Length: 230
Image (cartoon, rainbow, N blue to C red; front, top):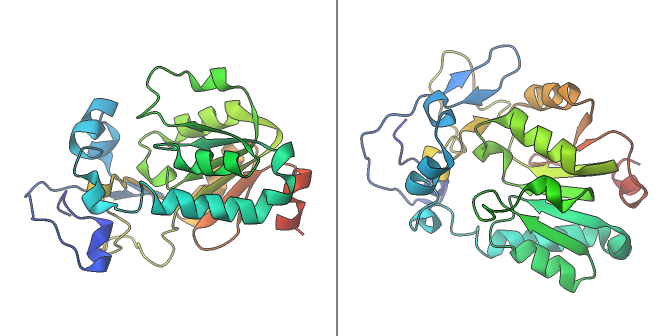
């Protein structure tokens, strides 16, 4: 598809065609789908071509609406235990989500590899709850992401993340029409439920979905999240 294809097309917003083709490859075993060329890009490439000043045109919700909504979700899920939870928002962008949670009593830290360039994430310690909202589909090296999250996850820590799953949207030998496959948004890693299960097993974790787009990796449910598994 053309590089300028974005998720905003679902809202009737179309960018001009730039004539740069982006191809996606599909694993017919687990259903993982990815854009090989963009998987080889550096952080500098992504900063120049995707996460630049025009990014707000293809994802207008990322600055405030989405992090504020996600903060509300976490407060509704875990607010009663806020003081007992050490939380990390991985891929937290401008830190709005963590700011909102701290105001609700959470011990929340934000980390984003595109923002906190001088921070070694391992130096942040370990966390009871790690969130990664709209992160997995943006990552070229999913194994490296999971290694980072595993190093940051405390004993019985929960990894709560959001990404839409591709089941029913992508099939072998067929052109991709799924609007979540959006190069201009940086959506270069697309997951089936099976591929997420395989990823969890690779790191000795369990995989569960709370909804179509909200998922958890876990081994032993922490007390503050027991109601999610009851």
